Amino acid sequence: MDDGWPREDADVPLLRTEVAIERPRRILSRNSSPDIPFDRSINPYRGCEHACVYCFARPSHAFLGLSPGLDFEARIVAKPEAPEYLARELGAKRYVLAPIAIGTNTDPYQPVEARFRIMRSMLEVLRDWRHPVTIVTKGSLIERDIDILAPMAREGLVHVGISLTTLDKALSRRMEPRAPSPERRLAIIQHLTDARVPVRVMVAPIIPGLTDHEMETLLAAAREAGAETASWILLRLPGEVGPIFREWLDGFGEARARKVLARLREMHGGREYDSDWGKRMRGQGVHADLIRSRFRIATRRLGYAEDAPPLRTDLFRRPERDERQLALL
Image (cartoon, rainbow, N blue to C red):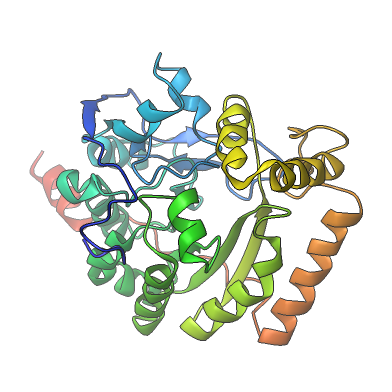
């Protein structure tokens, strides 16, 4: 797929992706975190080929006995039966409707999706059931599914979030080496909005001392591409992400590394990461307040909406083909 980078790129070493198959008992994951705006999510893949050094999901690979480093990037776990499990759970009598979030941990449109097509099959299930969904990605492969997303958007059943971290191509290549280029992500926003799929630009993560100065520029570029709403999240370094990120940061020199880590500690009460609800994603203190103010001023000036219209939940129904099958019984 077109990710905006040259095919022959010596700066990024090639890694052979290994894929293992997982068949979970259930596909919907539940959460009750007060600072997360959804209570159910799906992640069709464990691990992510995009290899973003800052990814807060890296520690989840340690749960599998794999490394949060290279294994997270190259040893992917796929759930090919996810669409079947999803249809089964949606059809349960005890199921209570609410929007499903996809891509909240690892990217559902990472390159391996071109082979497995799990995300597309799940979208077909959600479309047939007319079930609301939110999607978070930075993958260009989402454009493949515009034929499904556009009709769902017309019914108020889908929102898409595209994460954008920097417009500096050199920094992007170092920080998220196998993710689409900044220009390519702006093109994704443009293509989705041209199809009238509502897009939120997610300026995330903001890395103080490294990318925070770009916030207004990122918001302006995304707005020009068609993004309607915007959000931001501060860099999170849970578990094994901290050492991985610090080792990577050393490549910028001691002074820059010291500045970034010092700023993070200022925003997390003296620690590099604070896992407390309400603090882990936005931080606190003078610098966190400054980012909040800058974001609020920029989004208002650029004409961003406060939030997207709520997804519709009144259209949910069992697909007709299932009703016919039941009638035969």
